Length: 181
Image (cartoon, rainbow, N blue to C red; front, side):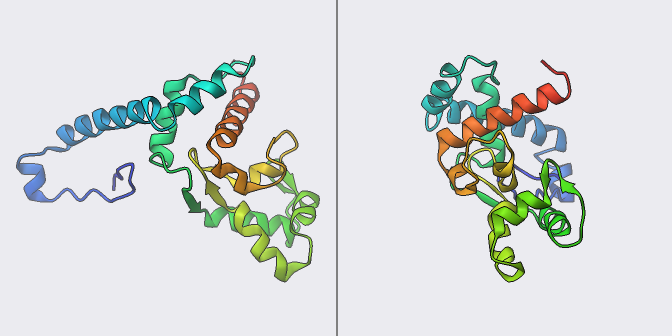
């Protein structure tokens, strides 16, 4: 079933489909609303942070409108947004305990160094790694990557400027990896 950016399920009843709002009308309206939300986020709450971040780098970055849309879609503009990702917990646990070689670029040594203190302590330490955080909902485990500028601390993703810098890094890495530059 389609979801709105706020995560609420859209229930299209027979009356709604046959009545005032058709699915086509809904999606046209929803796309317009998404553009408006992205524009509002860009122009108001985080516009300065986006502009400052883009202007501060000599490396090619994603356009401000793209970042604003990403923020509107991922967190609705809430810099403290946090979402649990159960599949990431399973995958990291497999690397840490079951001998899987890695999860993305994160290997067992990375996780062992991060969690320290043994298995019981590992569960609480993994918590921040298995959530997505901040304006653009970056997965916590990305802070363990060698080129992350977040000092192995996922909680820094709640700072809009730090989150946007990490977002740009991840987008550049993705573009480089798939030859999109």
